[in-house]
Image 1 (tube, each protein chain N blue to C red):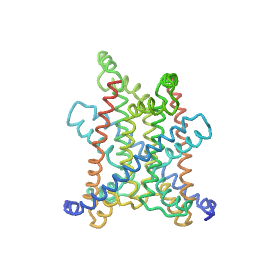
Image 2: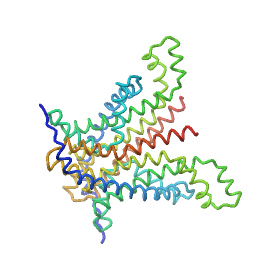
Image 3: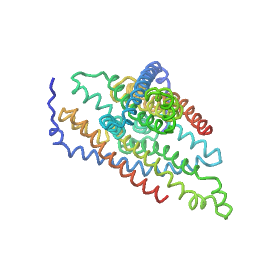
Image 4: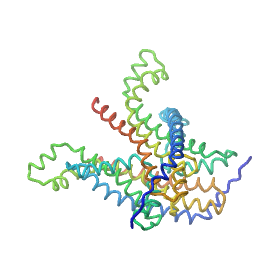
Length: 221
Length: 221
């Protein structure tokens, strides 16, 4: 059977796809920025010696890491509003789910980084009169950020891919627009292929840079 | 507003959720087996010196690593049937999407493991008169396999969580079954919390079990 390709439909609906791409990027930026900051707070709670701080932090991280992210998004959209007593917009529910998910994964990255810094640095900073908070901010975290940069970039790449799940909550990001267009014109082959390529163009530069960065850091030791 | 919890309403349909859990396990098992086979083949192609072999293999890996899984699911379900002129069952489409995608990730696990073995071992084996194949099978792989265990396990957990996306193709895995139970009981809070716990228990138990296995393997060395 000979199939006649028709990319005109895709070209005509490019403005819609691009609008979807903007929403994808919005979701990505919000979840990444808030998720990373929250992740730092969670990691500090997790390495704390106080059980009432690290207990809940461990539970938080393990729950988000051991359940599918799609289930989390669906939970925040359909179940959470019942506790809250207020309906959330699809975008808010998706952003909330993705942010908390990102915070759990990045908490583990922060924790790994903080624990990898030699004890002597803490002692040295104490010896010259720095407080714990100041040592963390001025000595430990700058090194953690550098050392963990490849891990954070990988997380950012994962997150960019995961934003596509928001389409299942009817957030009008690129995957959602793609499915809408493909079912309207009945051209899934062309539309879904183009959507896949658009994601590739969005994500590949980041992962290429991340791989180079990783090699450079590894070479420097 | 005080919310009246009603878990028993959901647990009355626990048999449906168990069917879903079995569906999840079946899909994950099939995708792991096929993914490993694809991954091993792709890894060997990627390490080949012939451009005609390693360029397509690299493109395969990079494409899958830089596009979201949900796009693969929809592509295999809606677009591939147009190319092959044959419609696919949801299970078949989901299994194809998951095994090719995890094939790309497993390929990197295999390649990483094989590349991590020092060059000298290859040279030594060749000096003893071993062919490329028997050097790979008898000298390199036995050592590399042990180093691959941890990343392989991690990837398989990711894959198991990704099976939840098959719900969007109406394959009866755990999340899809939960949606059915929700449409009977109208209890999203209880339903989605129950399946989140089911995922958590299975994945958390499995990951602790694997940690024991890894520790045992590390001791054997």
